[in-house]
Amino acid sequence: MAYLSLDEYSRKWIFTHNSLPVPEEDLAEIKPMTQARSAEFWKENISKQSPDAERFSSQDWPAQSQAWGEPIDWMQAWEADEADMPEGVLEHIDWQDDVTVYFCYEKYNVVQTTWKIFKKHWKNFLFLMTVRS
Image 1 (tube, rainbow, N blue to C red):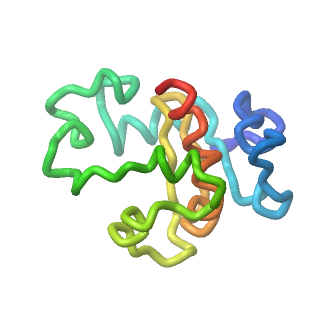
Image 2: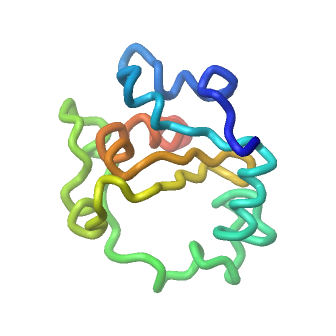
């Protein structure tokens, strides 16, 4: 089995917290991968040796500057009352709503969803990033 049920997911609270509740029909589209599948996905697509973003090597594509465009101040939009994703992100990523998105927290924690759900609930997905900042 490649996925956990949301009830089995240790970070389910990110999507059910009182301040940012995700509707039940959208929760069904958020699919946490098992640790084994997350690690396999991470190794195939993100990094063969680094377990998280803080330890990327220069060999890892996310650590290479040409992989990224201009920085976007997403934190200001995250703290705002509006739910909309920052316009700069939407301009840069022009995907159809049914495109599969893999949100990678770290090697053993990857969540699959669609672009439609990610756009709508991006603040939930980035909640842990704001706690660490």
